[in-house]
Length: 68
Length: 68
Image 1 (cartoon, chains in turn green, purple):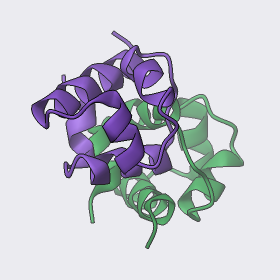
Image 2 (cartoon, rainbow over the protein chains, first blue to last red):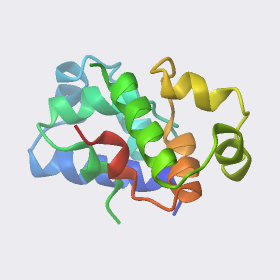
Image 3 (cartoon, chains in turn blue, cyan):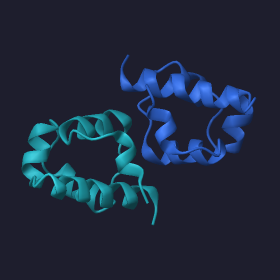
Image 4 (cartoon, chains in turn yellow, green):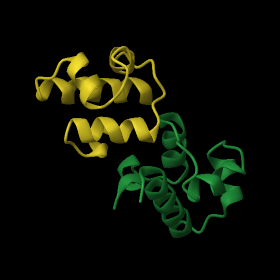
């Protein structure tokens, strides 16, 4: 599993733990709503500013996105 | 301090802890040697694939880059 897939898998896990839809996470994180599904599929090489937005929106630590 | 500056500060700390020059880190991480100084200055919105390359080159956990 490459880093993009690992990140996407963790993003989906964290989002579902908070019972958030992809649309509401995108809204909260101020990201385009089509971006969340493509990140979760491991298709995006996200940047640290996007990572920070997602961590704030999910009220979680950035390290959570990189867990095995 | 924004996320790019925090990342840069931690990258410099981790690199110096390993007594690596910017050039040797760039070589080990397979990154352009001019990229490391600009990341350390907080000027770069690095992506997860670059983060992974740096973590492997420094033999450190990705979470180390996001410590306060």
